[in-house]
Image 1: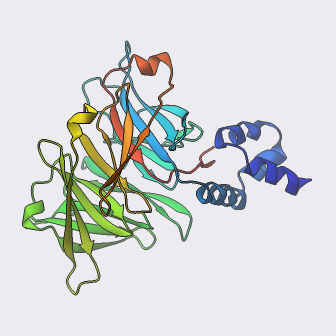
Image 2: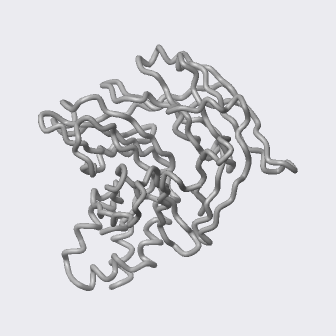
Image 3: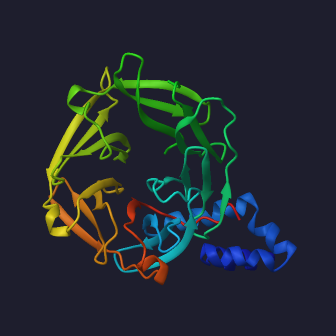
Length: 322
């Protein structure tokens, strides 16, 4: 009987599974068991990859910041949850999320939380005890020890189980850094080339065909540059790819948010609109696919102020943090 219940629960959405925690103590023990969580996520990962679309912004009239999560495929869109951001200051910028293995890190400065977009549950993170202000934090997952970790860096401080980020060294050079989440060790991979020195808000680190890549967009927003690190070379260097898309046709400036397992670049407008779509561009065939995100949120969402966009690929359901 227990194995039958387990198989039935494994086939349900994460939000439904979360409600079953209240059925009985035995069901709660089953659902929170680590082996069950892993089997649930393995089943979710084996299904068709999906997009996790996140809209971050302030709502009227209270102007509080919220994140709205939607799961979308080529055929349908599902509203997942809404999570309140840690900061309520109407003048601050929206807190941009970091995604790792089904969970999202939200927040800015000392106020941060981890949320589960599948269930809408969240937990507050403890404040970092440091006399220096925290200028940056990174979120990652160690698959060997099945642990989530957050790396916090102060102003004077120098997804595969490793966190990559761009940092400025003492010589004022921009370099690609690596932090091993399992062994908690630093490594400076390579210096960024001179034509990559003007990296602003359009700069994004992505995983492209299993390699680290940095993407940038020109001022007009229609030419995209992707630098892929060549780790097979004797001295790690960068291979450059460039392509253009007439972004004016989409009524908003586009940004690259990642790539799919087939090598397509994921592009989307920076801000929510009533005709919001995600584009998948294949640089080898010059093909362009369009996925319409049918947003069916609450009235609060529809009447919200300008909302920033984040898009993540290969989203899977998670029942952690219940």
